Image 1 (spheres, rainbow, N blue to C red):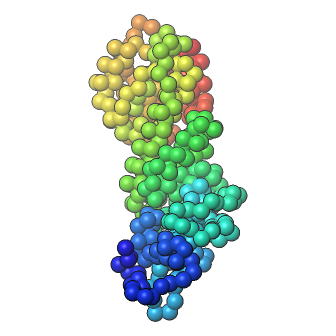
Image 2 (image 1 turned 120 degrees about the vertical axis):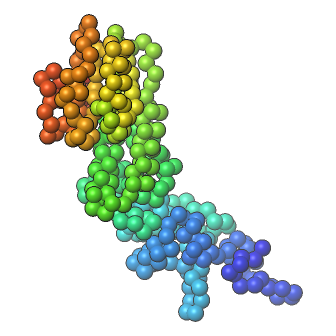
Length: 338
């Protein structure tokens, strides 16, 4: 079938010779808009890659529309793959141009060369939005940033799964997720943009952490650890890596969701009779010492831990212990209940 924007195919006795006769797929060319849809980027991004790095259509002559051949698209897919792995735009373009791209028989990416050594820098939005400033961030953190900016949850989940499998929960949280969460927060404060990207990131992180959280059927602790947000606090993502680490260490937990009413929290403490309670406050207005004092007393001692940036300037009562980073928090809770 002739592409709508492609010159009409020869008819009658006319015959093309060469590569086109041997491989009709090699003659399929796409417009800028079609390639942009295929890669999930803005047409302006393709024009920028062409202008800055020479990754443009080979079938581009004066007076004609820009058309990308299969080999051109294969190089762009290599560049996009390197970007999602954390390369800068310049590094990704150099990698794509240096890779050997055979004459394709269909629109599939070629066998790539090894990915380049990647450096730090700013994560650019592949869809034309503002980027994320992440100086000194790890390769995976920048790759995850590119994936969520492109709203590519599949790539984001794969990066998180690889990191969790190779480096564990604590390293993934501290070196991959937390830098990106900070960059997203700074972007929102600066421009008010990116709420949808933050939501996608949160859902990907939540799903990844749940997958690596085992069900503890024979816990080491006699009474469980209760993980919850401070009353009405809606930011509960940091509790998921803590739950994963504790569960992997054989600590039994009970985890509650976000925006929990104060009375519901008190009821949960009475019903569970936990060995320890961990309460998270992301925002200062939820770091209320009065809510801690209102927790019911149980027959057995309950160790109380509070965490989150909301407590940084607040008053932590003497009955509670402040926890900071994930590694020390997990160790403190484990030691308290086991």
